[in-house]
Length: 600
Image (cartoon, rainbow, N blue to C red):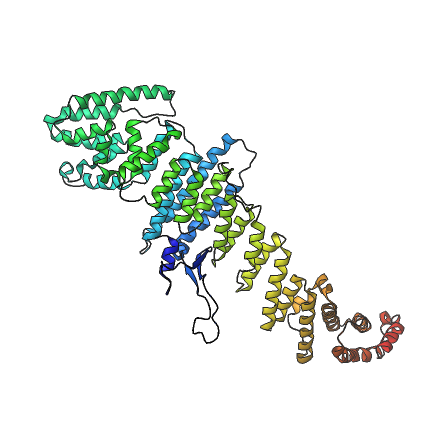
């Protein structure tokens, strides 16, 4: 049952057999709707509207622990975009491999933390599969190891993802009598993984307890010790290694043919594995666990110099031999097989279907695109595969209350449609607080998204005005450069002044600066407040001139004229007192009288 079937099966009244059902994938949910709906007439007794259901499918992925995964991978993603395109390819490859390992280390750290939390087994399983696939893609595509080194990397891949071998052997060694432990001969697991030194140490414990059998144990110890392992750091060529390995392989086969280990079935089994006997390996499926472990063990003892181009044949045959022919492969099997076939597009497609979010395919595809491995995969509607997946992932982040800010950087690095997506998504961010609004505003201002800046400021200005926070409302309207709304708020300030006899938010009004030119009413508000300040500082001459200019400029609201005349009365009284004893004002008296007459 796929994701859609699972989702539909949970909807009341909608069964898997119902054919007339449509669905749309969203960033974090599925929209399911009826497609064969016909509007019923009045009195028909039928339903009036079609059903529409929104099915959440990845609630687990937004757990607090997984939030760390998103945050850490975001930093890695941004760092990857800063790798210069003009850098030589040979210098880029180590950097890309390092980036891939950083992604995997974040996945593993998150997985280990989730294992300590109850009820997260499903998420842990998903992350295990993600790391398994990513690691294989790193080996095959990003590192692109050649023959010889390729098998070494595949062995590391299997050992990393078959870690229970060490736990079982540790349990055996810590028992009172390791050689009599029921799981002692699971030492074969070490042989299957090519860990010969560890296998030898455990086998010698048995040899020390059985003097009569010591010669055949020593013979097996010699074969394990002499097994050639390719060393990329040595001067030995791949051809020389292959010749040496074949001589060793023939020696193992010779001992097997002359029944050197016939007296000990366990050692004989090990010898059969050393010569690459597939039937013997398949008898130990429980130790191998998976068909891809069988594949790597098979290559180790049959074709250690396998070339990348030969992997698909061995992978397909190994899966066919290992899995029950009556059961279909799991999605993970199909994904790994596609990777061994070097079909990157199929890997990404299958992962997009099988996994319950876009995180994995978006980041892996981005890295592969930087490695120039996806150039041929362009989509019909204009965007390439990498950008499409990154846009889908970022859109999902925007639906989350604390992760939406990460999405901005993802949109920034989608040159074709990223800007359009960001403009659409940023308008949907709920602005619960001024602090969050300022964050959104800063993002828009940094990207010259002027329309979104005005929209946000208008929303916040209206909200502040409805809460009677005039200062905040005026500040937002100025930031939006909304002259009409600034005029409305300025009139509210003047009305409050007439009612209370004083201004609120003096710091804002005193520091309007050039912003007061946004509208005539705002200019009047700022200048009228300046008049009050001059009057309070007993700078009556300047106050009188400013008051006169406000009246003659005709920018004062008609309802405020009486207030201005009232403000002029104390100045008139002051002008007509005897100030002849103040020499400084003698020269100004005539002009002041003329000005005040005009006021009257």
